[in-house]
Image 1: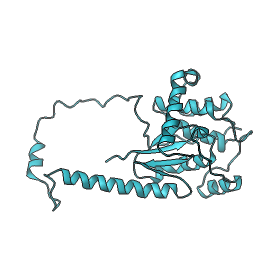
Image 2: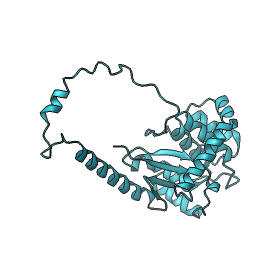
Image 3: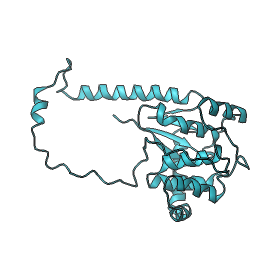
Length: 245
């Protein structure tokens, strides 16, 4: 059973970079990546020193942190690119590539060239990205996502939401993992109670075997085509790109 789960991030936030490098491996279910503008959430961002970020990156086995100049940088255009990437099913690989450009490559994501390098790393055409960041609809999507995050209780990034529970802080992923497991177990129990044909002893019901003989010729032979409007719930991270000086 899938649980409504989301990861909120701003590409200017180095703590979000560290979470982005871990979340796909540490959470047991799909999580939607949602780009938002941190300054629109209305809360105070957590203050972590550069040395703390560098130490955490080393503990995770990541490349040494290289800080972009200037830092912090204006992330609005990069977040518009992330929103466009999300609309075409590329939120995860673009965000990972952009985070790595910023905090492993030391590149300012306020510069268009840095954004295009990240886009190229996940096979997004530069002309499409240039058009995408100028679209009014993309700007509206980013603003709407930021408002929705604030309404859900997100006050700063990085944050993870499991159902209606918003999690942050250094134990965010451990707490999210537990919350996901509990939600899945509760959902499975609810489904078992709602299905009178489930057997308590764990044996197959003969009627289930009979159902297997039904004609399923109405099922499509080809896999469904990708919907670019669907939520971005990718699991496979894009390949690491060498930082660009």
